[in-house]
Length: 444
Ligand code: ADP
Image (tube, rainbow, N blue to C red; front, top):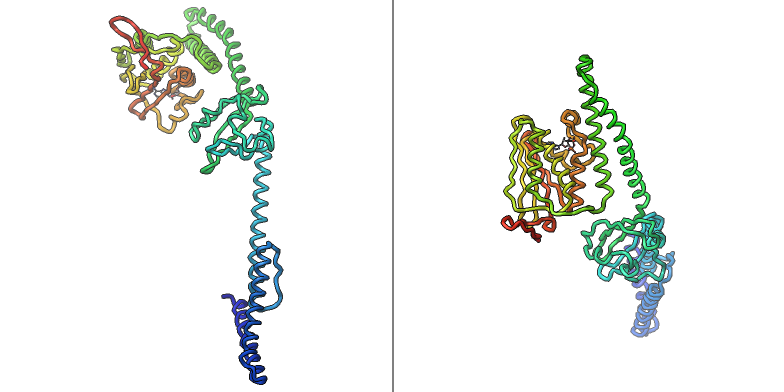
């Protein structure tokens, strides 16, 4: 007990003793000891009840207490209650200020934020951008079903994925010119946060970048063809001193031509959402072509094995698949020193899909480079890539082609031991060949 409270307690006890003693004296003097003592005790009890009632009324009326200046035990209780109440009020005020600041920050965000109740998917709160981007109206839409309210957007299926829902790009229900990127963030047991961001400007910039690269590459094509043509026409026999310069110029112009071709291929792939012409791609002739290309590139420096005992074909674009696979084969040849082994194989996987795998016993790729290896112009060693005639775009093309075929690329590599690039195709892309009858059937 703090000293102040203890002294108030003892003072009240002391007062009680004094009053009772006075009552005994008065009782003895008047000869009415028992009645006087009883009346005094009842008075004391009544007074305590009265104070207790006062405290209760003030507490239940949620009145602001004021500290008492007296120093009895009831006044001490008043003082302690006043202190507790003041502390509580201060804490509440600070919390309210914080809450107001958070709400103001969330309201001022340029992204639309909607708090949604998880099970019922009803709207609990949204900020101003929620009205601007999603067309939500306050207060009518509080408590409304989010999926119904944003009806034209395909949200029902997406929200069912919950925690695993990937960012969804879709048009704004208010203005089809605005593209929104929607993300679902579960932030408590019962509440989800729907964040919608206007990505129209980003998409526009991305489109401008693509157009720029495509236009520049296209414009470079003609002058390069001309330069290349004239270089081919020059006869080094006439000017033997020019021989080293001419062959270097030819090499460089060839590299530039390849770079431009790769950039155009990438732009074309990037501008496609789906493959234009899909067909059954005969994989035995594809593997034969790849074998021929590998042998031509290797010039007998490597042992090349192609496992073509297969009864699988793929469904997709023959031209794009060939461009992806030949990039992998060309990389395997270019990044494997002479005497190495390269294996190209196509096999069925355990889930009805298929895997095309290019394995080499070459330089390998350090694990730290693997996450970025398919980025444009990303190279492990720039000098090695240039020496081998690389443009830095090969794997970016592979990735794009596989994306268009809903396929994935797996890379396993060990420095000094070699690499395996595996393209995994979904069962829907696989056609099993009835070898005897030459008929095709989907494997799925
Ligand atoms: P590049 O035209 O430079 O070969 P790619 O996009 O095809 O560009 O490959 C990117 C980089 O990945 C290459 O520069 C090389 O460092 C590395 N790489 C690709 N394939 C292999 C491989 N089979 N073995 C070792 N490194 C490889």
